[in-house]
Image: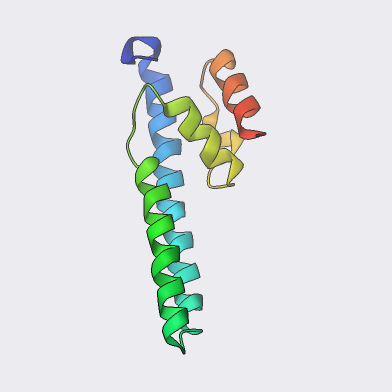
Length: 106
């Protein structure tokens, strides 16, 4: 998809949902890290934390940019992970919304 495929209202809805999902993702990560830090008591637990953070960073960076070519996939992934809701996508074209819903099921 390109910017031309989006009305200004749709772009606003998509960006708002995207930003909400991104912010919730970070909030969730911080909360998880705070809990995991309480369990750090061996060198192995430190390396496991490092591995966890590396994986989470990779996942976060993969969905942290609003890219028209991938935004439907990104919104579907955020929906699947319950970082956004369908209500936040109200205002999108029904075809786009149907694609996001379908992709979020896999």
